[in-house]
Image (cartoon, rainbow, N blue to C red):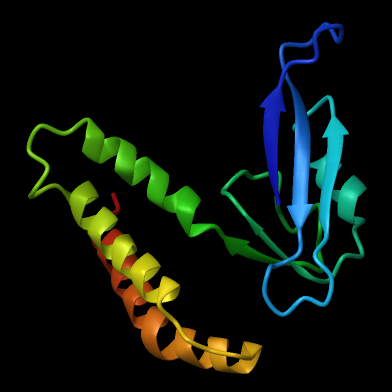
Length: 151
């Protein structure tokens, strides 16, 4: 789930939002994409779209509007691309890139993405097992690194 700002010319507001949801590409019998317009980015929009009784998973960025208050029965996952982007921006602004902590974070996450993209499986059970065996140790290393530099 994600929201994208845009300007509606006759709205009188500087920004409105398109909210987008879709089913996972894999293992879904039917692919569904859903778009919702709202003049606000308020977290209330999330529960308007999915209803507070939603019990599935929501993969999203770190926007605090996505949370247990709006969807108390949902499971939330963090999008690694959204975690990766600020480190990329930090590295772009560095003069000495090789020894920087942001560079190390980018390298650690790049290993996660590479391993994830090279998994081979046919069922959700196989994918989960491979992620646990091959990807989770890399994610654990990334989070240990981040915890080690946290203020």
